Length: 402
Length: 186
Image (tube, rainbow over all chains, first blue to last red; front, side, top):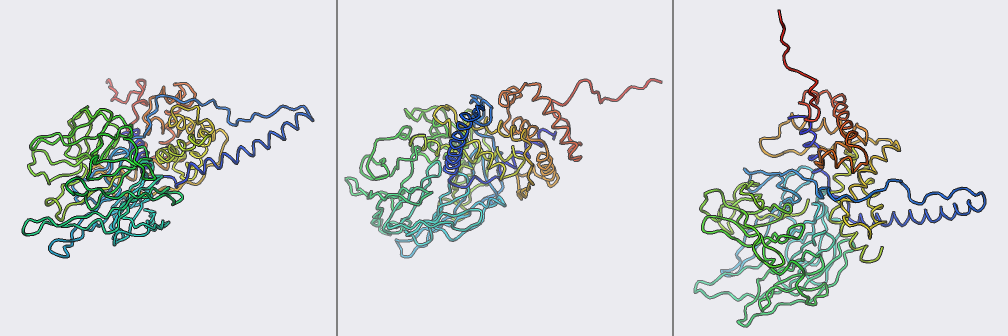
């Protein structure tokens, strides 16, 4: 290793350790600026008076003196190192690539209370920013992590609940509670972390049912009632009543069918059984048109950070796994990348995905990988999941911008 | 700034401040508080010209770099630098205790450079910018960037003898210095 390489590594490591700034930075900046301007106007008045009386020069109002112009060619995002642990499953230490980190993961189990009805529960492991390791936290039934990995919005056990916690991940303490009139069962942050959409339910949305021995389906009825859109800084936001509509055959959506934010951070999207199945709402619950780039958005990873590409469905055949990358405006295929399910964009050209191993013939034997558009290379990020769908040994990642 | 400008400024800060702060802390030699002050100052400048800026991130970065250098010109007193503990684990097979120690030595040495020297190194080795871009960003010549980088590397070695054993950087190798064995004639 030469001195350049060591310096580069040392700088990247030091950068990766930095927690994001405390929320409300923009408002602090604007407040400071207002104060400075007030002071400057006062000093101008004094200076003008001085000119009149003593004929001295008026001081320059703009401080600094450097004429600063924007430059086109600056990498907008510093490259952060990839953190991979291909021998770990579930993982114990940080998994990250590009601007995205696995902020948490959870395991699920179902407690069958009758022959046909049970309750699915999640156990979360949250990334401890100090140690870079995932630590078990059994207090929460739902965790949504804000960009920057500093704050998480949490729900206590026994959903739906009547308050939302804003957790300081570093200290493990809830900094603030947001009380709600309508009980909440699910949460998601907007892309910039300033808003929170909370889906409201009358009953626990994690109740699961199974078909009886005679093959008769157990009736399913969703208790979804609507959503809140909260401003995270103030903890305030309106509730919108958006219930459940059955289709012509009387079918309903899943019991848990949470609302999500669109990329614009203003529009909320949710599913109904009746056509159109995917609908878009403003914060007051009024239906609105499809926002730019959202018409063909069906996969978890969604739009690329620059908004020019859309993660698409599985494109492979048999044991060849790959996925489509789409043009968000037209839905046409732009490229095919490796990966079974595209989970999150690491940067504008790379994604974190689930994929089976080379030559594997078991669709459940998958691991987290980093795939890149235009490359056949696949970088393993985690060890393989164990068991089949729903069994122990499987875990689900929660990603956030780091 | 009107309501629309305020909203877009808030969105920009919320979305990009984490990455910008990482750079600001590095420019400040690892001093978190100085990095926050630096970023806040740069954002305040940018807020005043928000409507006239096409590429806010590029603009903020340039203000950050130049502001850091001008702070050095004002001879701000360097604060005490706290060095964070290293992460317990890294990518498998690459991270040894010795490598971690060396990186910590490097951090400490970087924090003792002048702001200008450190800014040049951060731009070259963290932002991966070519010398010509560093020169444009800092408003100096390519020759100045090159000589500053060269002197900064020499200073790092002087500050931390552990770094002296490392191979020289590509730009440091000079054809006039020949380390090959000398043939001795009888």
